[in-house]
Length: 137
Image: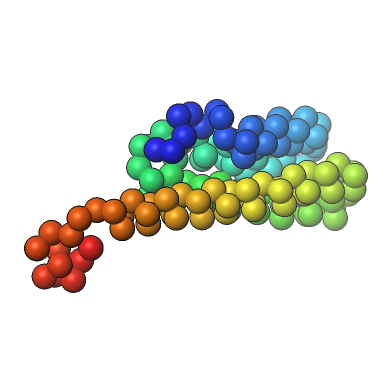
């Protein structure tokens, strides 16, 4: 794996800060279902980054990064809804929405980077007679 520790990834750090901010912003919300779902989605972002990294498989890591990206989009949707319901001030919602908008491209860039490094690694592997006969690399 290219990274020694997920704790060194800026996107993980940013995801943790987002989760803490969401917790603080929705702590007093009386819309319990929405509050709980927002907390779960916010926790899912850094948690999936960490879990994917610790799987020690590049393909698993990429899969979990995609899940984290989906959770960020889910949270962004819930923030829009909370704002429309009037349960989250526009300034708070806008700030958190912006955070999710910054995290998603960071995750996508990491996914692209990991896929590119995997392709380079795959291209360096010598082809065997059996794999070339079966049309595999």
